[in-house]
Amino acid sequence: MDTRTGASAPRVRVANSRLRVGGFTTAGDAITLTQCDATTCGATAVLAARLLLGLPLDDASSPSGTGAARPGRALRDSLAVRQRGLQRAMNRHARGPLGPLPWTRRLGSTPWAVAAELTRTLRRVRPGVGESTVTWVDDRGTGWGGVVAGLRTGLADGVPAILLTGGPLLGRAAAAGRAGRVLRAAVGVLIPRHYVLAVPWGVIGRADPGPGRVHLYEPSSGTVRALDLLAPRPALGNGPRELGGWPRVLAVIAPLLPLTERI
Image (cartoon, rainbow, N blue to C red; front, side, top):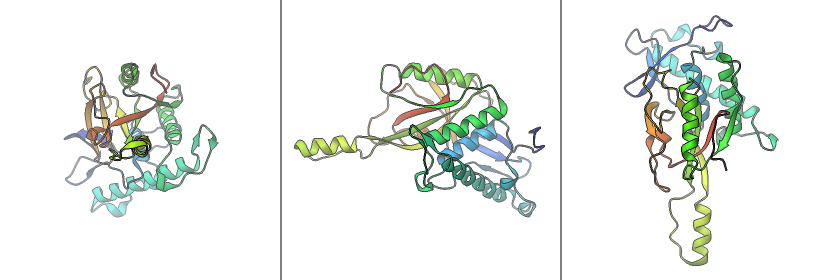
């Protein structure tokens, strides 16, 4: 219950490796939380954090009585409304190193907008928590272990974080010579593509998954699985499903933690 609004938060649990939201009293009254379109992964990650922390849906996105006969569908629709509303709000107030800037919905949400929204979410339950920041990381560098250790410190304290994942523009370039080198350099640039939520294991009733391992909520599938962030991953091609199929972690969005490997 949110004492400021009197509203009750939907019940949330991880069942069969999926983040389920609903009443859990009758068949069909709970759904798997997934992003409603290809651009709302950031908003959905923030929404998942809110629900896991026990925050209620606002009035605009709460299921109405008209969906009583099909509560699962009504809940799915209301969560989609909330995703889009969060995305619009984040895009209106998108900020980056150069200050405020407009941001089209077709590009999803900027990391800085996601960080600001995560800060607002965390401060509703922990008013003294630090501001969430975007820390660009090298997940192949010597300090990556320190980054993961810092991330796990926050998770152990019950504070979720968001990872920005991505990969090269293209998997490979076959051209030879100078033109080939230029092309390979161009297509090898790492492009941000997706957001996933690092979930505190205590919030979902799980044990510490072990050194280097983190429970990740992946918005496109709605799954929650543990991934060893220190395990080797291919530089090109598909990455683990826990990272949305992308091979690289490009940034960590979280309150200031002892993250040692920064770009």
